[in-house]
Image 1 (cartoon, one colour):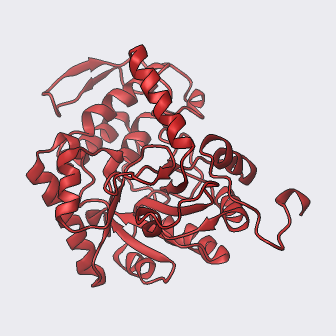
Image 2 (image 1 turned 90 degrees about the horizontal axis):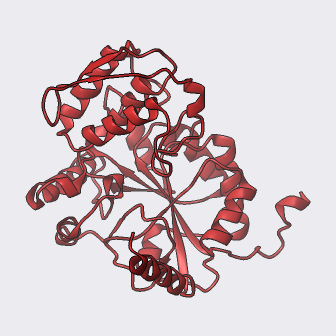
Image 3 (image 1 turned 135 degrees about the vertical axis):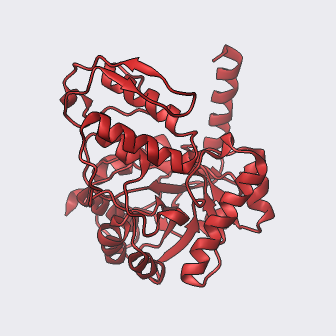
Amino acid sequence: MHRADLVRRRLRSAVRRRRPRAGILMYHAIRRQDPDPWGICVRPEHFDDQLAVLAERRRVVDAGAIAAGEVYAPDGGAVAVTFDDGYADNLTAALPLLEKYEIPATVFVIGNAVGRPRDFWWEALERAVLLPRRLPDRLHFPFGTGARIRPVHVDDDPAGLAGWRADEQPPVTARQQLFRDLWDEIVVLEPAAQDDATAHLTRWAGADSTPDPHRRSLTVDEFLELAGHPLITIGGHTLDHPSLIDWPAERQHAQIAAGNARLTELTGAPVTRLSYPYGRHDASARRAVAGLGLDFACTSRPEATIGGDDPFALPRIQVPDVDGDEFDRMLSVRHRLTGTRKPGQVSRAAR
């Protein structure tokens, strides 16, 4: 990054931190998982801790109130909870805790994920490459840029993968590099080709091809149960979770519209909000969201929202797998979403 760009980014950040703000929090799965290269899993006991912090020290609102600019404040006390993808544990693990603290949430669901009989492609890739096993020395990967044979020299200890974040840290080991290279190649493939590619890798690695029950998506019945709960609002996450920036405008529009239509077909209710897969969006994707009459769309840009933010490109803060105290510090220090203790409540430390 050029020095001028770095200065502009820092100035922009400093200006934003002084503005009245609120926070949209992003979760995916509520389970313990290691390795977790994208940091999408929060174990249930930590999620419980985090919701306790929100209930005690923040004003939890529906994401629509933030998108509408109704709750910005100097202390950043208003936050909203969202989930991406449509994992089954959103119902089985997250919802009971949301009920415990009476906290509303938006669940952005991939249309074709409902009732999906196999792992998401990114989960299958992790199981094939990152779980402890010796990998073959050569890989024939006939996808994307064409048939290629590459040497594979993975002799590292998979235990060293614990804590590695592919979105924050460069690959250090050969296994990490292989995973990241394959992920970058698969993410731009057509949806059917993504599944074919990870099935191919699963066979190559000698991994278990049985879907992991802990990583599965919602069944139709589970989705309807979740969608019918008064604390839950369903949002769209496209039909197949493509990298929209790699698709032409007309296909972006079709993916967003078809995903919403699938969810509406199941629930009978309109879908009025969206999150972009992988947080990736461009001007044509934002125009598609606006043209479809949606109220707002969320990205994964990790910062608080402020007045004047584009409602079709709202930032969100991905929540890490940390306990309540660390979560509270993250919101307060890194994002200045400080909030205040509610009257009559004692601090967590005093309990």
